[in-house]
Structure formats: C-alpha cells, structure tokens
Length: 247
Image (cartoon, rainbow, N blue to C red; front, side, top):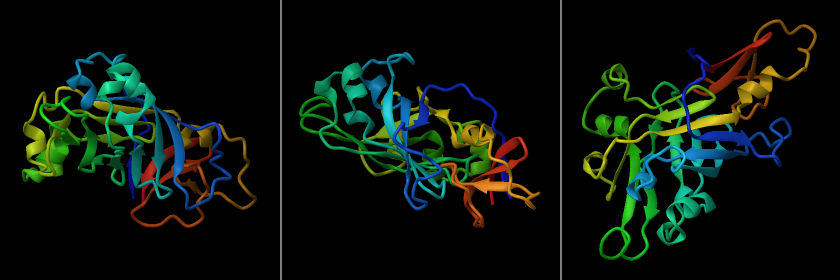
C-alpha cells in the first residue's frame, strides 16, 4: 500500500466542494463536483498574463468516485478566463483538462485538446492547442518516472494540492511536439483544495461504530468505503489522523 504525506504545498489553484454538494449523501458512483480557483500555466501566459493573480480564476472541477481522475471543466471558456484574457480570446469549443491522479506521486496530464482559438487569434485561421506536463513529454521521449522524479519535474497530488511544475503545450496530438513550442515549461499549473475530503473527514465528529478499532477508509469525495479495492486512491483515518493511501 502506497502512502502520500498530506503536507501543505505552495499553490495557486484552489478546489472546494460546491455548496450544493453533500459529500456524505452524494451518489456513490457520481463524480464529486467541486468549485476551484485555477492558476493556469498554459494559455494565460500566452496572452501576457504572467503573474499568479493574472493567471487565476474560479473554476468547476469534478473528481471521479474512485479517485483516479480530476477534471477541470472548460477552463478557457469560463467566465474567469474571459474576464482576465478577454472574451474575444475565449475558446470557441469547450474542452476539459483531465489529470490522472491514480498515482499521486506521478500525476499525468492526459494529452488532449484544451483550447480552440477564434479566427486569427493564434495566426491564420483557427488553431487547436493540446496541453500536458513536462513529465508527460519526457515519458513520451523515453525517460523513466524515476529520473523525472529525481529532477523534480513530476506532477503531484497530496489530497489537497495538485501541482504541474512545468506546463507545456503544442498544436498537435504528438506528445513530443508539445514540449517544443512557445515558452514550454516556463509556468506551473497548480491546484489546492479549499476544503479537501481529508479536511472534512478530520473535522467530522462522527464516532467510530462499536467494535471498530482499525482504520476507516473513504473515497476522495469523503464517502465511507467498506471494502477498498486494490489500485484505488483512498483517505485512511485512524483516530484523529488521516492520510492519502493507494491500496
């Protein structure tokens, strides 16, 4: 079983459970809908938005029930992006950015379309932008996760904060081309939970049922799990202590 420390990290994207969502009553198989403060290392810098304040706006995020993926919903079509970058620069097609967090010590950015430019914004005609992390580019180039981690280029998620230390983009589905374009890796994309499921569980006054002496397990939405499955990410609570674990 793999564990990840829940240390606080420097961050610029904050995610919290949306007011309309009750993690304890939510359907077990439904993704958790979260609100987010998202700091962008991909498109915002292209438009000259280089400070953390300029690159940050509120977002909607969804987390899969099994804790395997975190999805940022259409960040470049959001009201926050339109406000900071200008409505005329917003994507003409909705695109999500998906993070595979099944290994919290080596998070992957799923290579996919993230932005479709309006006519003439990125040169002649319309252009589609693909995003990933420097680590994903290096994996495609044949580097091992161990070497990438040693060089601190791996994206991580500690249950509260997700950090992509070097965000890279490209104009095709070729992962190698994504690491060789404008300003590649100059900015980080980072995410921090406003109130993570871990914090919710730690502040829960629920008393353990009689006879329960071992650790309790919850998914990343904070829903109790009776039988954790191998390979999934869970929150383990023992008394007043909680940690993120991969079974």
